[in-house]
Length: 322
Ligand code: UFG
Image (cartoon, rainbow, N blue to C red; front, side):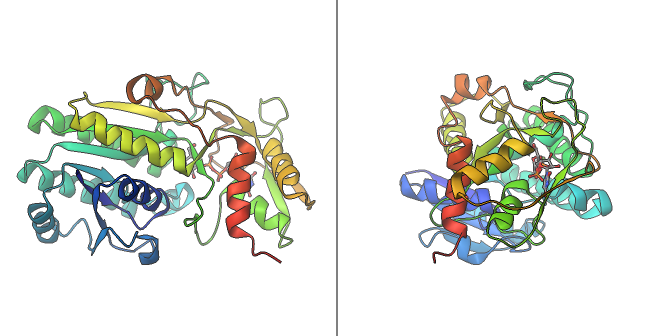
């Protein structure tokens, strides 16, 4: 049995990953300050420590107590727009407190780290599909913090031998029977279209003049269960001595905003009003992963990331039955 420390395990991807770790028999310790997560997201069989990663004494003592074989570090702030308006907390948490965590790992001799990174590290890519070697020009403080911490991990490997896998998520989406994404306010495309399909509002399409086939922005949507599965594989890879790396996690297929709207109409059988609006500041035209490195190193495939399945999984869980 392996012991895995999951920071941010009360969040969306962290909670689904915890569920999968528990299901395969690992011992899981979740640490989360609940600033963005929800206590009821933590699996009953995981140990839950309500703590801030900046609190060195607490983190040191929980590492000494539980001696994890690996750490999956999800905890951090994730909203691109918020990071533009107020970058300080992003730098503090995503880089500063995350580095405190690394210091605690080093002092406890723990050297396997799986890190939640993002396609936001690339900014506006020169080439699509995007390979891991694409230039890193993040266009938001959020994206910068993810890239900065990847570099910090590289420094800690050189200095202290900490090995890591940075997983660069493309557009996380979908739901499991027990976990759904909860944000307030909700800015993500699929939850907002589903809200429109439930009859609550009009969906606005942000930009119709992109250099894409239908003029709307193209993204690579990847199901949260597929993302979680990659973390389990990355833990095993590191424990088995795998070298540090960064991996794109996407399906490799891109869908435009209009194609996602069509998928929601198809899956739900509902129609709803669509407003064709202006671009949202900072949105790249097209982000689609080349996931071949994750396939080669981890044997990972996005098995549940068919767009209709993603939409159906969220619709089924989030829509009260009549
Ligand atoms: N969009 C709309 N209308 C909406 C909401 C979104 O047209 O009401 C558009 C956006 O402009 C974008 C696309 O739908 O073109 C997807 O937008 P999301 O907000 O769902 O996701 P983003 O691609 O902006 O960002 C997500 C994560 C980031 C991550 C990025 C990496 O939120 O953290 O994917 O691909 F960095």
